[in-house]
Length: 277
Image (cartoon, rainbow, N blue to C red; front, side, top):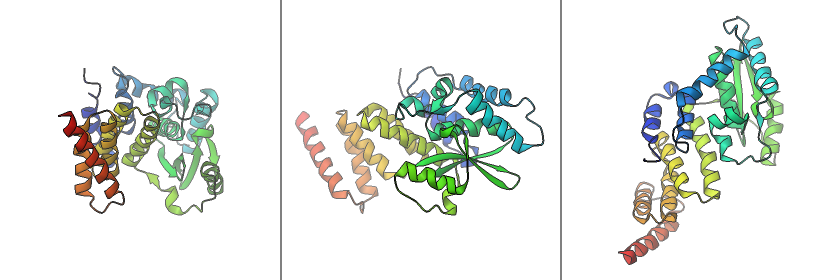
């Protein structure tokens, strides 16, 4: 069986207007690439169950009460929390494992909160602060900010600046654009970037390729991803595929800062391929 058979399903899920992309389903299809047989619909039902268990009276008029009840349920009663012991465990980037272990990284814990909140009729969104991902809710004209990695802590904008300072090791003056909602494509690309970094450090090149395939489905003009996929192919000994990616990168981005470096890698790969033939 093709281990990457879920790519076609992922492409279908994300090949639509951004607002229509089913965020949780797409995130689970990312997980399914590494977990053959993962039942995506069954995992989606778990989010339904979380929302229902948190607040059976989901149609009540008090949105702020619903939000605080959900926050209490997920982070106090169910114990969802940030994985501070092994932050770069790949399981922290896969939604089904986050639901199983109740551990994750900021973006996947935000995804759980956002998806459960939306099932309760709340206007939830992701907020991509520099170095740290949080969740936001629009309630009665207010923008409520929560940090799912820190058990759903409520944040002021000043508190966000402190969170960013700790994450980056330096102060950052946050602007209004830092608090803008992250759209579905941006959300998924950021999830994939985390996975790519983990697998790149592990030199797990087949997995790197699968991650990049999905990033390119979301953003076909991401030249750096095509360049990096070439590196992953060559690192596996798949020279012809790596050469094709590097050639396309050099053609489409002739003014790239690393043009000469990639050209040198391409030349060496061609020489090696010629020797093998």
